[in-house]
Amino acid sequence: MKKLKALLVAALLVAGGNIFAQTATPATSSTPAKKEIKTKADGTPDKRYSENQKLKKDGTPDKRYTENKNLKKDGTPDKRYKTSRPDTTTTARKKK
Image 1: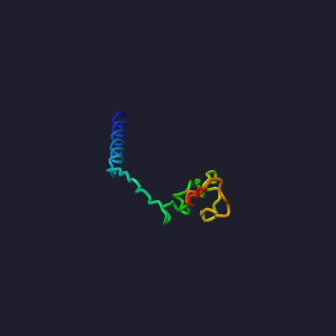
Image 2 (image 1 turned 30 degrees about the vertical axis):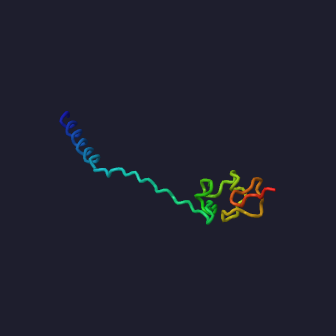
Image 3 (image 1 turned 60 degrees about the horizontal axis):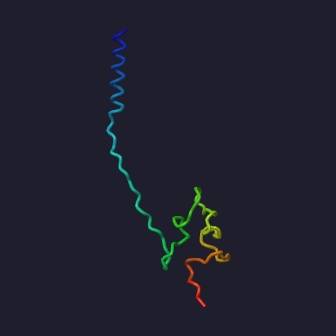
């Protein structure tokens, strides 16, 4: 009986050794390249693209942030609503 157990253990060790003796490919850390931020002609970020907005997990703009409060369905700012603070993309006010 001891010989049978020894043969069984030896067979399991040989089978287990073959299973785990596979050559593993070296882990390559692929660092994603920085995405180019799409900007308008005047140099400000274009809010039509999702990388320039704060988004929810489902991809829709997060309305908790002031820049996303008044957006149209395509993600561009809605010009019908005035914001409480001046927009940085417009020209500065003239001083009297």
